[in-house]
Image (cartoon, rainbow, N blue to C red; front, top):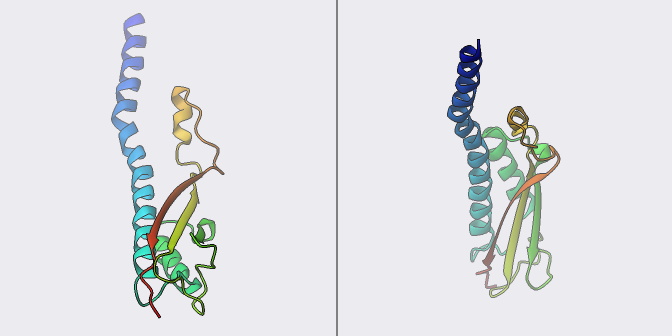
Length: 141
């Protein structure tokens, strides 16, 4: 009886160690997709023809991330600049030399809820993973 119990516990732990990296990769892939999107928006928004990240670019980003499995309603974009100017206004682009910063936030949801099985407290589903970046504007009128 003791051997059966040890076998069951050992096989459960072995299965956990085999499965744990798989679902952690979902978290890593989500974070990587968000960072890739932030880098792309900064590259386009800070180029010499733009100097801003407008609502149309953010909507297109939402659609791309929704196609990758994100809930577009839960994505939150925060655009900042180093000179305090509005970085989302196409009528007043950020001039060369000022930085445009972008932060994208998305909740963890119940992605890590399975950690409860081994006694690890997962993050609150409302906590958010955050990616950010900053690029100097190249816009010259």
